[in-house]
Image 1 (tube, helix red, strand yellow):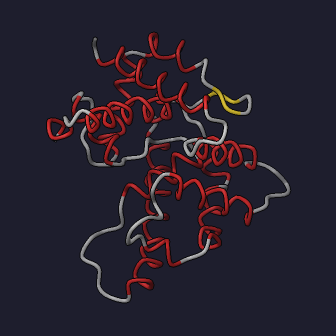
Image 2: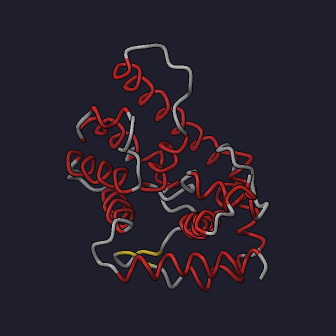
Length: 234
């Protein structure tokens, strides 16, 4: 099958598996995303509650394991991030269609929120580690936050990167170039992908196009790993 059929198959498989278990850990994305979308424009925003939602979503997706600096902080550390993400300037990024990123102003907004997240969490990380850090902040964390709150970019984790590299759709580095490669892939095949995505919803809201991309290529990467084929994706 071609890449489009593979993404349709993989994203549908991921979605169906998620819906089978009403308390499955991957449901954390649905809870987090739906609460953030509903909070946009609200007159009474519970930042504490949204921060807790974000923290649990990140934990469900592996960002609190091992030597993660977030393990040393409580959920309230995310409150300044929640407030920034809900700034009305970012409304256009919430659930944005891929074609929206062909507008330079939206690319600039994405770069702005990237910079905010990187600078904020980098300061926290330095305080926790109490030493000079050789590596920059993980783009996995940044993109997981953006996927969970705005649904505007896929989460660039190990499996997703393996999937896009295996299918030669985009580079494995999180940047505007890679995002635009994903945008072009979706737009080129929108007539085949949209009928499938439109059947996916959470709390009466459609899954974002980038979430379908995220699920599809993540599943491809996961299957590669399961089949001991992940080395071929690098």
